[in-house]
Amino acid sequence: MLAMRRLSPPPYPADVAAQLTAFWHGVAALEVKYDTYFTSTPSRRSSWSEPQPSTLAENLVLQCTKTLVRLSLHPHLPEEIARDTRALFQQLFGQ
Image 1 (cartoon, rainbow, N blue to C red):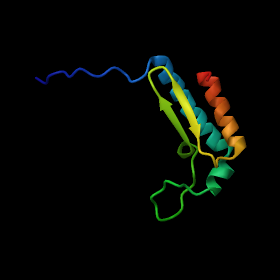
Image 2 (tube, rainbow, N blue to C red):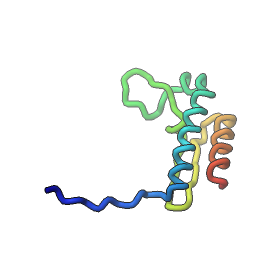
Image 3 (cartoon, rainbow, N blue to C red):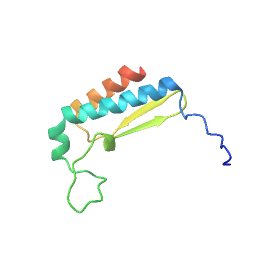
C-alpha cells in the first residue's frame, strides 16, 4: 500500500487564484488585440535560431504574496498596451 503524502495548501487564497487566472486570460486577449505589435516585435527570450514574436507575458512581472499582487511592466512596452494592461490589473486587483 502506498503511503499518502500530505499536500501543501495552495499558494494563494481561492479569490487571489481566481484573479490571477482572470488576469492571464486578459493578457491573452490583449495579445490578440495588439497582435500587430507582438508579431512584429522579436522576442527577447526566445532560444530559437529563427526570430520568434514577442508576448505580453515577457513584458510584465507579477510579484505575488498571499494577499498582495504587484505589476511591473517593461519600460519599452508601447504606452497604449501598458495602459490597457494596467487597466486590466486595476479591474481585477484594485491596486
